[in-house]
Image 1 (cartoon, one colour):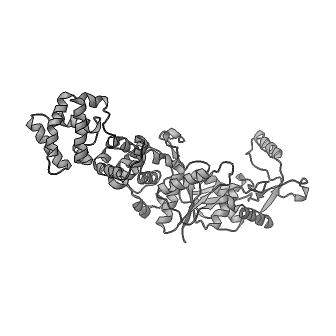
Image 2 (cartoon, one colour):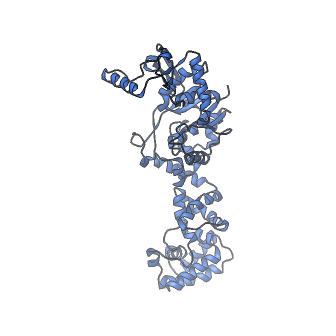
Image 3 (cartoon, rainbow, N blue to C red):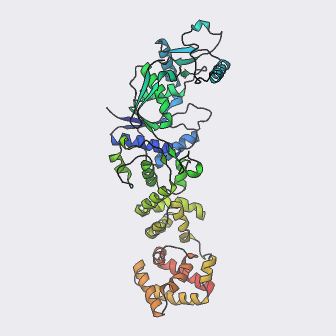
Length: 469
């Protein structure tokens, strides 16, 4: 059997973390089995579905590296097909028109509550002659659900889940205005798309029983279900925005790398022994639904940040520079050209060891692009004075005369200069850092000199000496 999975978000907002993990698991299972991963946009809620949300979903999936096969399917465009199936069920005697008015349905619910019974449709029109319908009334179409026996959901994560059919009423397939319900649309689309495995959150577990009844009514094979426990906040309660319940694109904007988010979402409910660092290629090789746990996962921002730190250290410097440039442009208020990004890339080996996110990396890199003459912060201004300026003035010709210009050569020269004057290295390095960066925090100062190059470094020293001597 060829595996076909699908991710089916509703475009009524951002792609939240739970949805992103569901998409990842569907993608991984399809890729692991050599199957197909499809994307379906469930846009039947016309009032809340927006083009902006659809684009945000596409953008987030692309950022996460989750490519889908073929073109996305839009559910709303298939309304005629959904209605066609409902009419086929009526013709087969497996569905019927229901003429209950909203007031009658409300009274039905209130009576059930008053009598302590479950609030369900009571089957008023199940076996009633449609000729009894009020003139001009538009009916809803309901499924004739089995009233006896049980429906068993054979779930790859939850195990066998049995629901008594008496607990399920005759669900609506088409509303009185002719629009299909979620239940009908999902079943028809999953069948027509050839979906073999439905992998989704366990908040859909009760829906599965109803959907299985509809598959059986149409004599269609049911897909295999796998219902994944939801993601909770660190305290075990439903996630709040403060705890991480924001869109996947928000994590990109916070400076997380997609590979860190992939790895984190993978481990947020799935495991492979004690392995924690699992690149996407390895995840494809290992992923199986048997590794999904039954308990809710807990979102932990510290673990995500630690993973991001790991992947930043491993990242290619050129790629990291390009990604950092997006955030850096917002900080410095101007676009970065190719030469600027080249400077940023040269600084990456030392800078990426000291930042947890791309945003932090961008903030730490601002000194590279401050216009001359620099503005010096309070701490740098305190370090730079006539005495240290004189020291830097003496150092300049030693640096200018160097044959090479690398971190090792520069460190040896500055150490020799400090020893010659019987000074600790810090007594020279501190004013050197302040003069070059305008502050007192930076990557190793010899790396900074190397990144700036000979001409820019000496020019910045000239500026500082002229100002503070």
